[in-house]
Each structure stands twice: as structure tokens, then as C-alpha cells.
Image 1 (tube, helix red, strand yellow):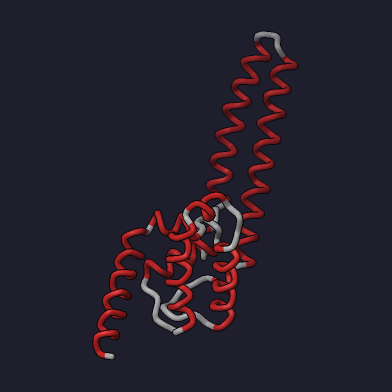
Image 2 (tube, rainbow, N blue to C red; image 1 turned 135 degrees about the horizontal axis):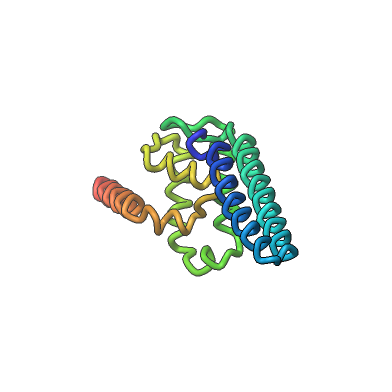
Length: 170
């Protein structure tokens, strides 16, 4: 989970650069006797920096809340299975435009993970990574398909082969 967190050292560096550039520009404006514009510019940059810090802080707090659901092994515990099954089902039934227009791709991902989670099948490293991206809301079902299409197409082909071989035996 730590790999997804924003580090505060990056925040200090970037906000320091932003404020120093804004301060330099504001000082240059003060030298040209446009002090009101200089104060307004610096005040806006200060507000933007503070708002950005709050976003970083809230993002890290949201990750801390989801820490128990972080996938770090091939098998999931019961609470992780419940969480992912419910969240993936909610995502599939959402009214987002991407999901609505590419519902078939979203269903492939949903049924792929639902099958793996209900039958307690081991997850590959790529599948664990995808679930973690879905957990931190970097991906939804549709974008997961487009970003990792080869993984799911290969898996669908293997499932189809397996189902055909079962039908021949029966």
C-alpha cells in the first residue's frame, strides 16, 4: 500500500518551488509598482498550495482506510472477497458513460474476477496489481480492460478452451 501513497517530501519540494517562483514573480511585480497584483498573485498561489496539501493528506487518509483490503498475495480473505465483489458489482451497475458504452468489456472483467474470487483461484501478480488499482480508484472496470486487454483476452481464450474440452468429454 505504501507504493501508492504520496510522499510529503515531494509535496514540500514542489510547493516550495511553486511558492518561490510565485514569490519571485510577485517581487518583480512589486518592483514595477504593481503591488496589488503582486499580493493577489502570491495569495492565489498560497491558497492553491494549501488546497493541494489538503488533497494529498485526504488521499493518504483514504488509502489508510482501505489498507485492510490491499491485495498482497494470490488468495484473498473473506472481507477482501466481499469488498471486491460488491465494489466491482457497483462499478458494473454504475451509470458512468464509459461503463455504459463499453459494458461488454466491463462484464468480462467483472465475471473474470467474480469467478476467481468465488472459486478461490489464485490471482497472478498482474491481477493483484489491477485489483489494487481498482481499490485506490485509479481504474474502473472499463479502463482496466483497455489498459490490460492482453491479460484478459488471453484468460478468456484459456477459459473458452477449457470449456470446449469439458464439452468434448461430456
